[in-house]
Image (cartoon, rainbow, N blue to C red; front, side):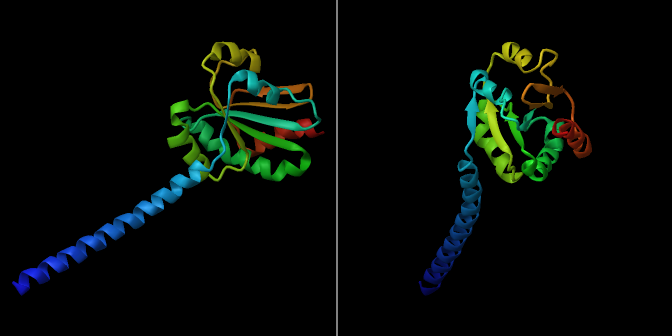
Length: 177
């Protein structure tokens, strides 16, 4: 009888240890999830986004249209982040407009923002009427991403392409001189 009790106690301790180990890993996952939950993601339709595309305050705006599912977009994001850091003192603002699907905001977009440590302003565009708003951003835009609008007051340039850092800086510098 004593042998059976000892075996049961050992098994209970082992199960309890396993339970504690599972809780520790769940805590780590919860910590990552809670970081994503703290991301303030503002969701716009085109009408509320449009003022960001037309400011006339003397600042250079770099508006990048991208999505987490777009490999070329993800590849160039570090260049926009570098530009944001290096050109902030030059009155340049980078805004990353995510075209991710609304059902992906919580499980994909917010964790992506956290994991990539994005410091640029990220907003989501949720407007299903893309045939109306795409030509308003630029009349020649096919809707393909990545796409970038750079503007200062009334001077505008639109790029339906990927950038490397040097190309991006070169284009932004045209608005600074």
